[in-house]
Structure formats: structure tokens, C-alpha cells
Image 1: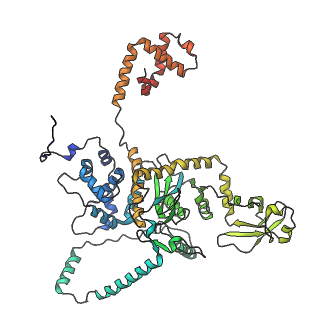
Image 2: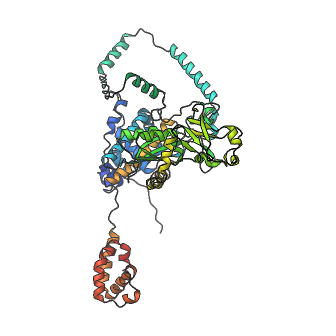
Length: 577
């Protein structure tokens, strides 16, 4: 007879979520090893002194961690998941009869906090990693990866149309704002409400400015540094936004086209072919065994990877008080500006340099010897190339030989095809490039380059395959920076919790029982014991199998005493006895 199940649910009586969640559950380990009470200090400035109590900031950041560990893609899906999972309710501290926060509240809270709060939350986790001695600080590795934006190429529109529309809207908003201004005369009721609000509002305590550090600099040097810093584009302070300047006739695609879906996303050529709107996510990773991510920044894809490198490296160095011996990156970071800044700071730049000379069939600049004292080059035939003109805007100096000498040279076909004489360009910081080229022949450089492949790139693969970094779900630059910081924080958190001893698998009881029974069976069967130890000796001792077959049982017993530790920790060997 086929039975049928009737759907009938009785009300729960004397049931607690504390009893329903297993004691060895993951979220119990997470709650026990990570205290998030520090987030209240991070977000204290974003709340008013009075009014209706908001969602606990600890609950908000716990939900962000649940989204990371569960691989969820939206706040709506997150709250549906939390409503179905008793373990998530227990981790958040909500009982069965308590309503969970609405998904729209999480979006409004994220907009209230902004990027700065999430960056400070990321820094707080890195600080805990540093306290647990997970940050080595002797080596730094930098790399970036392409991440698709949540927008399509079809949304690209001429930029001038968008800017004109925004200008019209701003002008109309200003006109209506003038008409809606309140009159100066206030009613008596309005004055009373204003007085009560002023009396009940807490006093705003402004923190004093920090005392400037004593430095031996003149006023002229102070002004020069201030002018230089004001003109410099701070990539981290600008949240990775492009320094949009047009030099000469060069224009980017994003200079005259913009996406109406995600205005900060720019066209990106994918490595596998094709084009998509996207961003670049930059990581600065510590060279220690834990591979802690020390800095994160998302920039539009039009930003070259070498541009924010100096800000990321020096912010990492001074924020975490590190003294790295070298910084390792790939070829795209090997610019004159980056190498000069690192070498002047006493940090070796382990970056491969592009060899542009291989593109030409004539002799390259390496065939010419530079004479530093006379500031001139000497060609392979012994002729001199003298300095000509001033330094170009891209930092190069021209050296040229007389046209009459080059045209009469017997090896001119191998040197140049020009009738104006051979030209050689030298960068202003060429001595730094020569120093970096000497690093390329050292074992430390080869070790650092091999280490980079398994230190940074697997972190990007982990974030893309398991945590949704392959495509951003949010839009606009400050939001995708928040998403990247949340993912990087979770990656660091996994290393931190592993250090504190969470999530270890329980002891394999079944394997232990099998090995225990196999040990008793081994002692109970002398012939099998003899064959097993004999086979073990035959595979681990430099003697032939014929001599093993004539070994005595007493000798096999002595060998087992030596081989005991091997059999004890090798479950496979136990199960085969």
C-alpha cells in the first residue's frame, strides 16, 4: 500500500536555536574566534545621537561575511538564505520569532557607510593578521586582474550628450532651489522645535589636530613639497578614478564615450579575445607564507597598471611599518618612475624590463658604449655620438653622430638606414634601469619571479572561482571598490581564522579504527606479518628480493620496530597489512 505524507506543522514549544545548531558548526567557530565589536567604533560617526535605533552594525558586517562565505550575489538572496538557515540566524543573534532586516536596509546602510568604512574594516582585519604574526613584510608582490563590469557595451553613449544633460539638470535644480527657499520669518512653533532640537542634540566634540612631526625643512622646501603634492594625483584618495588629461592628439575611447549603465566602467580588451566593460583590481600581497593581502584598489580598465603602483606600495609600507627588501611585479610595472621611486627608497625593483630593441633589424643601443664622464656614446667603430638638444617630455635625451661620418661608414647597413646620422636615445634614469638589469642575473630575482606566480595569481583565481570576483555585481567605482574590499577581507579572514585554530576536520575515527583492527590482525597472523614486513623491506631497503625471502621472523620483528612510525602515520600501509 502506497502511503501519503500530510503536511502538518505544530507550533514549536521550548525549542531554542542554541540547541538546534550543532556545536561544531562553522559559524560557531567563526563567532568564537572573531570578535566584531570593533566595528561600532568604525561607524560611530555615521549615526545621529537620537532617533530610532538602527540595525546593529555588527549584524550588518556579519551579513557581509555570510555573503562572502556562502557565495551569494545580492542582498535579496542573502536575506532569503538567512531566513532558511538556522545557523545563520544563530550567528546573527536572531531568534525564530524575530523578523530579519529587510534587504533594502542593507543597501541603504552600505551607502551611508561609504568606501572609507569598508576600507577601515579591511585594515582592521589586516591589523589582526599582523598581530598574529601572519605578515612578514620583507617582500611585497603586486599584480592586477581584469574583472567584468555589470554593464554591456551597448550602453556606451557619446560623453558630450551625458555631460550636457547633467549640466541642464544641475541648472534646473539650482533654479527650483531658489524658489523653494524658506522665508526668513519663522513661526513661534518652528522656533520652539528648533530650540528643543538644539537642546537635546549631543555636543559635537571635535578632535584636536595632530601635532606635526619635527622636520628640518625650510619654508621654501615646505612650499615646494606642498605644491608637488597638490599637483600629484593620489589614486587611493581619488578611489582609483582616472586622472583625465589629454596629452597631444591621443584620446582614449572613454574620453568621448561613456556607459549609461555604469559610467565608471571603461572598454577592456579581454585576454581570451573580445572587448567588455570592466575594471582592474590591484592587490599588494605580503611575501610571507600566509599571503596576506595588504592593499586593494579597483581602477577603470583604461588606467594602466603601473600608474597606481607607487601609491599602493608606499601606503602599504608606511601604514603597516614594513621594511621590504624588494617589490616584485611583471613587465607592465617596469617604468622609469616606479623603478626610480623604489630604488631611491632602498627597495629593490624586481621587475622584468621590456626589450624594445628587438623590434629593429639594425644595431640596438646596447651595442653603443656610454661614457658617463664626457656624457657621450661611442659606436662599435669608435665614432662619437654627442648630446643634442634638451630632454624630451617623456624623459629621453638624444645623442647623434655626424651624418658625414655615418654615410661613409662601411657598416652603415647594420647600424642605421637614415641619412641624417645614427641616433641613440637615453632615459634620464637609465642608471636605474642598468641596476635593475643586474638583478636579473641573481638567484634572488629568479626566486622572486617564480614565487610571484604562486603567491598573487592564485589569490585572484580563488576570488574569481569561489567568491564572485569574475564579474562585479555592483556599479560605479566606489561601489565596486567596496565589493573588492569585502572579498579581500574575507580572503584574509580565512588565513586569520586558520591561524587561530578554527575549522579543523575532526579526527578520522573510521580510519583510526581500521588501522587499529588491522594492527591486531597483523599480530594474529604471523605468516601475513612476515610477508608484509618482507614486502616493506623490499620496497624501502637496498637488498634484493631473494635475500628477503630467507629472512628470519626475529629479524622481521626488529625491522617492524624501526618501521613502526612509518606504518603508524601511513593509513594506506596499515590497511594493506
